[in-house]
Image (cartoon, rainbow, N blue to C red; front, top):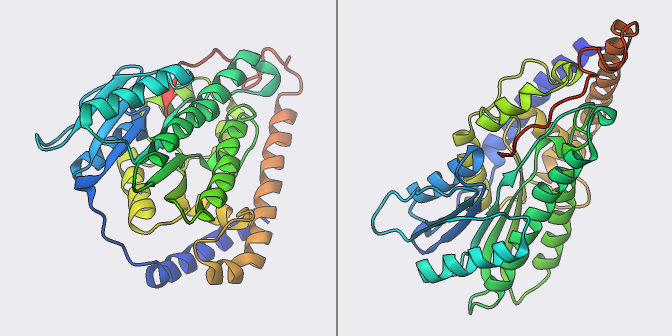
Length: 339
């Protein structure tokens, strides 16, 4: 059954690649020289690569993190760096005020990228870890978008882009991510509502985009792996993590140049996104309609595989105590990282 699922994924992947190659929308021109992007979590991981890529393309960039770093690559660019705890609405408001004062313009591209992942099995984790992830991953994002959109709304053009960073975990959740996945699913639900609200407002020209990056080769991912349960590693398998610089380029191209709402960067995330699209516009309705019956079968196989992994893991360790069994012991709290 699992072999069938594997080869089905390969066949679907080849079909998706061919169809997207010919049906993907043409890139639209973007004037980066007039753009002011604000990126939180911008000194590490994906946030840093997004800030660097925007700077390379000629945008003015405000980078916010617990410790800000200069990513300006040209003396002609306006740049602002600031330390900010995005879980504090007051600090976020001060961040936007500083960005506007130092660059002379309101940030019109909002990319809240500060985030944290603390993997662990539910009963092994302290409630503090759940609160930490929800406060930073969801409420931190909410604070930035709320303050940013209010300021964009006060400009004459009322034009901008909001690029939200969710995760593959918002589409595929399994043992070890009972804290992280809900915080990223909340980002997805918020994005769906905000997209609909702003898309129907003819007085504004604000686009909302939602990215689902997979595992990436970042410092935060290495820290995450230090406390990741054995069963979580087993389900994830040995799939290579993507480079954050690659993810950054793909996100910016899809959001700013193609205007896509849901953005996935790898085959597995793309297939699951199609299957769990929700009530939002699809990137390629014709292709996804054709693939729907196949995707239903494949996702059912994958779901049963996840359950098989957990059941097998439990049987192997049924003679060990919950405290001593690999993957079931108390996991130390991991430090914060940027997604």
